[in-house]
Structures are given as C-alpha cells and as structure tokens.
Image (cartoon, rainbow over all chains, first blue to last red; front, side):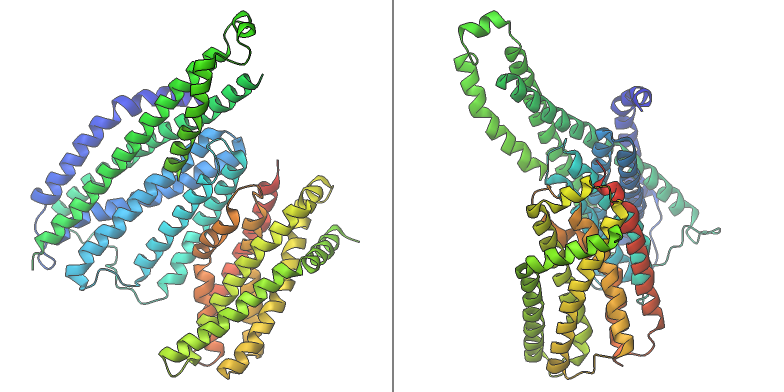
Amino acid sequence: MNQLLRRLEPLGWNVLPPVVGVAMTAMIVGALAAAPREIIEGEVQRLMYLHVPSAVIMYGAFGFTAFASVMLLWKRDMRWDAAARSAALVGVFLCSMVLLSGAIWGKPIWGVYWTWDARLTTTLILLLIYVAYLLARSVAGPLDEQAARYAAIFAIIGVVDIPIIQMSVRWWRTLHPQPIIFRPNPALPDEMLLVLLIGFIAVASLATWLIFLQWNTERAAQRVSALRAEVDHREMA
Amino acid sequence: MDHIEYLFAGFAVFWGGLFIYLLLLQMRIRALSQEIGRLEERLAEAEAPPAARTVTPPAPPGTGGRGGRDAPEQASEVAAQDA
Amino acid sequence: MSPFLAVVEKDLRLAWRNRSGWASAAAFATIAVLTYSFAFDLATGDVRPLLPGVLWTTFLFAGVFAAGQSFQDEVEDGTFEAMRLAPIPATAIFAGKLTANLIALLIIEFAQLLLATILFDAGLFTPALLGIVLIGTIGYVSLTTLLSTMGGHVRGRSVLLPVLVLPLLVPLLIGAVRGTGAALGLEAGTAPWIVLLGVFTLWSTLGAFLLFPVAVER
C-alpha cells in the first residue's frame, strides 16, 4: 500500500483538480446548452445529467466504504479506516444531492416532491444507514481502533443489506422512471447519451477528488490524535 | 411546461451543497494543520535538553501554562467538527 | 455441559439477576401497545388494520432497548471480559447470548400478544402468526445482539443502537408487517412475505455468526 500511495498521491494534488474542473465545466455546458430539449418533460429534464451519475457514483462510494472496511479488519491499518470514513462521507453528500435534485425534478413532473416509491425509499434508507455509520464512527477519536472496527462491521452488514432492502421495497408498485440507459439498445438519443457520459466522468472525478481531500483530512486528524497522546506522554514523564 | 425555475433550483442546490462541503472541509483542514504545528512545537519543547528542565522542573512556566489552557478548547473544537 | 449451554445458562441467570432492566423493556412494550391502541382509536374508528404495524414497531423498539440493556449489565458485571478470556469459542458465546436474549424477548412478546388480543379483539394465537413472530424475532435479535455486544467501551452506544439497527431492519419490518396482516386475514396471500422474512432472518443470523468472532477478536 505504501508504494502505491507514494505514486498516487502527487496525482491527487496535481492531476485531479484540473480534470475535475474541465469535466464539470463540460458537464454544465453539455447539460444546459448542448443537449437537446426533452419533448415531454421540458427543460427540467436536464437535471438528469447530474442526478443519474450522482446516484451511480454514490453506490460506488458506498461500495468503496465496504471494501476499505474489509481491508481495515484484515490489515488493521488505520489508514483504511480514514479511507472508509472519507468514502462514506462523500457518499452521504452525493446521496443527499440525489434525493434533493430528485425531489426538485419530481415536483413539476410527478406533482409531488416525495412519494414512497421503491427507489426513493431505498435511497433514503441508504442515506440513513451511512449517516448512522458516520455517527457510530465519530463517537470515538480518530485513532480508536475498537470504534473503527465496530463501524467497519456495521458498514459490511449495511452493504450486504442493500440488495435485500431493494428486493423488499421493490415489491411495492413503483413510480420511478425505469432504467433506459443500461440496456443493449439504449432508448436515449445519441446527443443525450454523450452528455450523460460526460456527466458520469465529471461526477466520478469530483467524487474521487473529494474522497482524496477528505482522506487527507482524516489522516491529519489521526496525526493530531497521535501527537496529542505523545505530548501528554512526554510532559507526564 | 418547461419549469425552468426547477432546473435552476436543482443545479443551485448541487453547487450550493458542494460549496458548503468544500468550505467546511477547508475550515477543518486549517484547524487541523494549526493544531499539528502547535503540538509539534510543544513536543520539541518537551524534548528540550535535560539541563534546561532541571532548572524549571515541570516545563517552562509561561508556555506550559498557556498550552495547558489552550489544549481543551482546541480539543472540543475538533470534536465538534468531528460530529 | 457444552460451552453453548453454559453461556445460555449464565446469560439467563444474569438476565434474572438484572430483571429490572428486562422488566422495563416489558413495561415499555406494554405502554407502547396501550398508547398506540388509544391514540389510533381516537383517530380512526377501526384500529384492526393497524394492528400488524403496532405489534412490530413495539417488538423492534423493545428488542433494541432490551439488547442495549442486557449488554450494559454484562459490562458492569465484567462477565463479558471474563468470558472472552476463557477458552470458549466465540461462536458459542454468541449462540448463547442470542438464545438467552431470544428467550427473554419471546416472553415479552407473548405478553404483548395477549394484551393485543384483548385490546384489539383479534385471534392472535394462530400457528401462522406465532411462526412469523418467531422467525422475525430471531432475525432482529441476531442483529441487535451483534451490534450491542461489540465495542462495549464505545461511549454513547446505547443511544446509537436504534439509529444503527432500525434502517437495517426495514426488510424485516416490511415482511413481518405484511405477513402478520395476511395471517390475520387483512390481505390475501402470505407466501412471498414469509419468504422475504425467512431470507432476511437467514441472512442476518448467518452474517452475525460470521462477523461476531471478527468483532470481538483483539
């Protein structure tokens, strides 16, 4: 892990920010100007270019939290705890954005901000699970290994629970637009698909950059804890 | 049927949220790096040559007292941001 | 005597010694059923369709409450540390704790079913409904036991427990409430909900058994 980190860390500082900037600008231009106006839903449909990529990348962030949690339990390296926590935080941010932009889209199209539709319910439960994860982790200090392991176990249970939640909730009748992108023959026009692809790249790079920044912050917090313990130890002696 | 105000609101919420997130992150990074600097200073003081320490037994009175008063405040600050 | 039975016996004895904690869980459940039936009776004339929801929210809250309580007792008595140092497999410790919690909660739930039979005038003691209650209780007790037993020194854990457990239990709540409704004849067709409940219970029990040794290892 050390070698890989040494090679990747400069990329995080030097390469990621410009990539994020360019991709986000391209996404805004594409979504607001280049993409054709949707005939039935009108201009508000342009929210999709932000909403759908955020939803997919959110699952990626939560998946990474679970992966880092497994690695923490296995390797007992607290850097994995910082990674899991950062990914969960960014995932919670994306999840809130997905719920909010979805509600704002829902008002003109469905006539309501919120409904207990299958996908909406699942996403809300997902948000609650990862907020709970962050709470469970934040009751103890950054270097508290017991709390880190506790949160890691919870993250693993949470990620395995997601498909069961989806299955159980889907047994209600669903209002949410059915996926039309992940099919052999996507039903979306080419221009829209291209803008959506740019949206995926933009949100993915944004999420990677945020996780990287957050990870550095969590590492700094761990260092503060370690230093504080050491100062106490020295001044006692 | 265009609801352009909803489109505007949706994008505004995303960018506003991102801005607030980055602002909070920046504030936390600054607090943490200041804390690291301060703690490293205190560590260096604690490691001062033993001769200096025998003259003023526990720690230099001025710095030690101030450090002792500052520390709990910073700790609570960091804890508040953690939560 | 096998280690499993020894742990069950020890936990039941501990539960009996700290019966005030379990009594308050039972009292909480009773108050909840009474308050629900009173409040819903004010709002709607017919409270019977609400019965499955009333029963299961009460069971879940009582279960979470009791799990936090039971582990608190154990930490105070120091028995958990002693058990971890003893040469007992972690799986046996977990199975013992799970069984003891299950027995205590089933007793509380039995009392609530009796109370609800009187208040809601419903025939609750049918084999189908008792089966749903048993499967559902195993499902949630395994998760609450796992999450309450881990990290005993994590401060504020008992307050956090419902926040952690309840979102995970959504599939169980859906399956159990719908299944109970079907068993009471409030809606047609029980099969898929019982399958969902069974899948969840199987998953949560297996997951808890696999993760418990990881959770308590030093």
